[in-house]
Length: 427
Image (tube, rainbow, N blue to C red; front, top):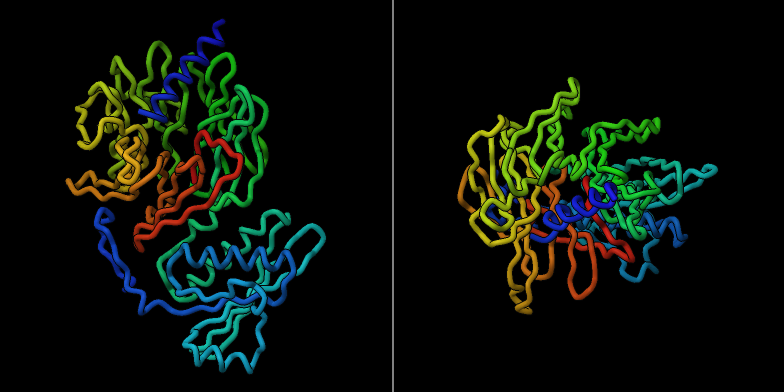
């Protein structure tokens, strides 16, 4: 009975969380329109039509489109994409193609090795690089790493986020969920924590070696799991909710949602000393705290107005609380980067008139607000590690997808999710 009550209490609070030119301005809340005339043209080509080659080829095309630092040319039919060497080189130059990226591959046991031949038609030089993955299913990361190399080659803005792991929890049955690794398109997926109700994964460091998650059994317990040695360290338990909602940039401090005696409050946890400090003592629900303003304060969701909204407080117990968002009456999820906050707000869909959730970007330093979505249900926004991209979960017309918003180029991309019920994710 005690375990059942704890689970119901936890899920109740979870419901609250879920429903209630290349130069550009530094202010991300301003809508950016990029100049594409100065963007180099790249032709992506496959050396042959084999299955592995075409997988890497298609993924690289998608990656280059998503980064937005090239005008990407490719063959939609995938039938005439084999380079004819010297004869074709002149043809490509005549078409104002600046670079040719040719994909090939080889196998070494279970390893898959992708080979990128880059022909720089401006400098008249050629570079060949190889990319190794230990398992065939991880081929997306070959393409992602190729995209980073091409981006760095032209000295464009850093896009290392494209080759980082996404970690997410997905429901697999009644009171069951798994923690799974993925690439940003969710093409690659590998379960790492199975059996039981495993929820709210959060990366523990920038190197993505460890992550925190919550296991719900007799009580909610936070663990830290090491992907490399399999160590699973218990951190703290709570009879109600126990979630790591954010990790400081240096990994030394955690913001937690805990409810040891009643509804949830925000707590600060020191990873080295294991000291825990309660930051809020509100009688209602305070959850989803995220560090802000260079880790000197935190933004969080609270129902202290009678509905979920977003507030800010300094990192000291019971200090003054300030309202950050003055739009909507259900702002239930958020993510932060530096001084910026992206949040989901419930409102009427502009096209259908039905209720949905849209994403907005605000700054703690100004009153300006930038709308990031227009239709559908858009939830669980998460900043990339560099703050220039936002991943979110989108639902529209009974179809689910992962969305990527590229703030600096003002473009969005959707990647369909098939038969996956995502509970939470981090990247």
